[in-house]
Length: 174
Image (spheres, rainbow, N blue to C red):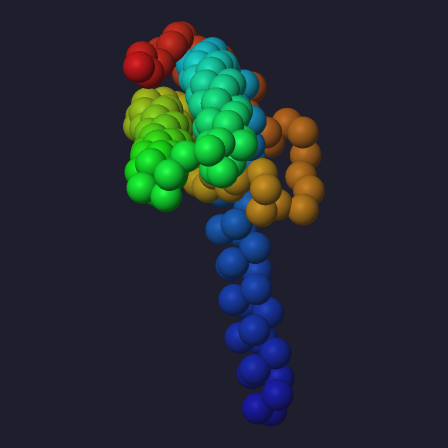
């Protein structure tokens, strides 16, 4: 008799939970795609890429110049006195240290701008997503990268990108 009661209770709860899940609407959002393919996201990526390329070229030029100076100094090692050679070597070391500091600073600045762009996009995306969820009676939004599958009709990525493009056509990164 105890087993029959347990089976009845388990079956009853299973039916109730199945009924409550049937009313909930679960959708999928590819957040990476939204951040990378929206107009503002693409613009931010282009700006960051141009800045990175410009920094890379500038630092390669400086590095070549420093290597040339080092080669010239080593060639003059026997001609210069120890004091002059030591002084020139210290100046070269200081230039190299400044170069490394500048390079680290540029990389940190670029990283901060990337984080700033992502934060601005997410800040703008939050109310858009909230309104979309409310309008369409959605119970749960899941990021696509953690899902294994689903119906294509449950993917709201394109609609969200469209709304984000209308709301935020570009980011002002400088």
